[in-house]
Length: 471
Image (cartoon, rainbow, N blue to C red; front, side, top):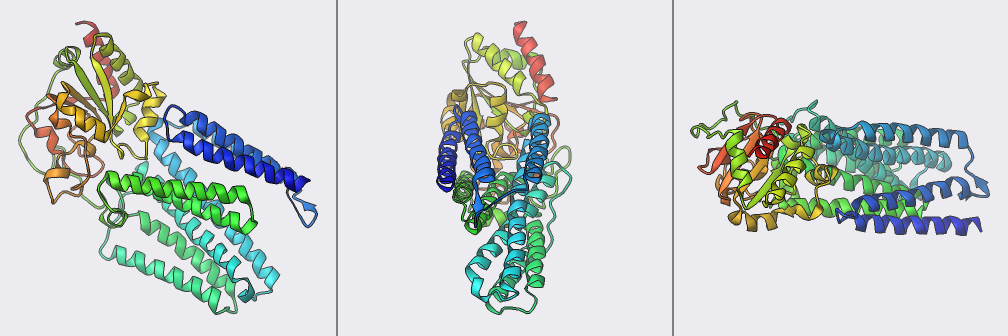
């Protein structure tokens, strides 16, 4: 009876995972979908703790189990409440890395159990050993890669590129695969040495795998590593014959893979090109005025900006990482409401890789209660720019850089961009002329229709709101 109840708990959890994932595809239902999936996971965890048994023996060790849950819940809650929106991408990377680490630890524990049960002879346990190795390798790569991504996103780790780096990565991967085949096929006298060598080299490979990747490619890498974690978790589900763990891992792996493919498509690049090409990886940053001297930029005052925007018929706002850094999303929403009160149509143009993680701008604006129907995807926004009076760019750089279409030597060449230059007026808010995350100068700044409005995004928006109110 207990087994059937546990199976029913797992069934409920699996259904909630699927429903939650479906709801996450729509910004209006995303929050509710997250809560639905979390409720399903809670049911699965409680069911496993109290109902699971093997050979008539239940789990026990409830003190350790609930102690671990309590510590994790407290740390996770405090971290989630304290994290700023600018730090959300690195938090996502860190949490994803923890998932990969858990999958790798499961493989380590189960390998030690397997060696003990088989008395060193693993030849009759090849299927189980294969799943253990897959969980170890994929989980370790996900953990190490996510930690490097976390460091790069918060600025503590820089892109490192050196000659032959990709050959080194390929070599490390081949060594990992060769050791795994040797462990399964030749029954070495000391399998633990080989196993932990695979673990160590997988960690090293994860580091070198992400180290050269930077710029606009980071959101793609985050989603790819997320899919790795899902696959590693699914391996744990196979090991324990746990249906809900298997279902959750497959869903995460599949969703991460599909998101990776969609983001590569959004940048008009293949995944191979992302991993080898590295937008922004290893490129030297331009100086304060840019590497290519294209002439002077045209500045615009706050009062002139207020007049242009207040008397426009249609305004598009393009949010970028600079908006997140300044924590200016609430001021941006206030500006939107003020302009609409004056009869101006206001929309937001969202580039798929704006920010530092998939959906970064959507999350940022949702926090400020910006209506979801105002967030326009790149394709739709590009169709409307020609009929737009003013485009206000807040901290975005690479995703509006015309070099992606016009300069074959540019590292972002071929990436679809927001065609903001089609609008009648383009106003760019930046702190300075410093290049964006890809490390290259933006040709847009020197175009005839473009005016620069320098300053912190939040301060500029607050002053702009005051100016418009005084008109």
